[in-house]
Every structure is written in C-alpha cells, then in structure tokens.
Length: 174
Picture: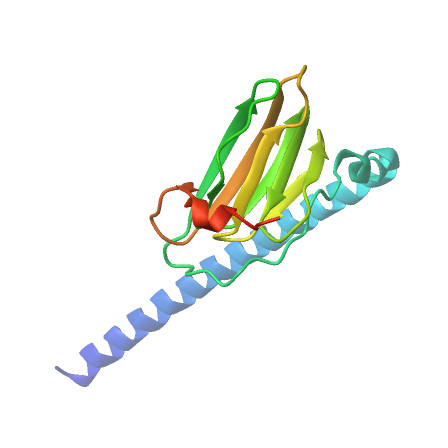
C-alpha cells in the first residue's frame, strides 16, 4: 500500500468519524431541545392548573409498608389471588411458603397467625403474613355479609401457594 493510498484511507476515515460525530451532536441537541420543551410544557401546565398537581396526594393512600424477607431475586414469581368467603365461611389452617400481603376489598375478615392475636380486618385495611407463618384462622367475620380480599404473594421458588398445616402445628397456637 502506497503512502498516497494510506493518506486517502486516513482522510476517508477522518471524514466518516467527523460525520458520525456531527450526526450524534445533532441528535444530542435535538434530544436536549425535546427534553427542554417537555419540561417547559410541564412547568406551564402546572402553573396554568396548579390544583391538578395538588389533588394527586388525595388519590393515593399508603395502605401497607412492610420490609420483605431475603428472597432469591433470580426466580421471583408473583401471584395475585382474589379470595371470597360466603357469610360465616372459613378456611382450614394453612400456611404459605411466600410472604403474603392481603387487602380486604369488601366485608370483614377474621384472621389469626400463630403467635399473634386474632384480628378483624375491614374493607380498605391490609395485613402481612411472613413466609411459612401458620394461618390458624381465616374466615368471614360476618354471618350475614360476604367478604372478599386480594392476596398478593411474592415467591422466589416454585411451590404451592397454600399448604395444609398438620394438626400438631395448630394446637396451642393461640
């Protein structure tokens, strides 16, 4: 390869690099302008309608904050289960291999986890059950009205969502 060919190759490479750099800077400037425009638009809409932003906190309410146990983040799987109890209905003692967050949608739920007092949760209230906690009582608290809750389970392994508890684990649980 001659020095003239090398010079032509280097010039072509330089021109290509300069064009790439210019196109990137044009794209960067366009992205910055778009972001600035969007920010200005948001600021203007907040000034034009400040009550829209101030109403946001009224739309949400913190229902439950609960630290989670250590989980294997490589195999996470979630379940969202709706549970309905007819008036007076209950489930047998059981446990869940995963942490459970419950939210009562309608009616009231009577619940007891082994080692804790029996509690009644009403519509709009939530509860937490640690993994493998023995759920001694899960029942509709009313003999006249149905109850419904949503259970969110966060599992890090493939196991059944609910496991029957042997009678030996139920006795003396209160």
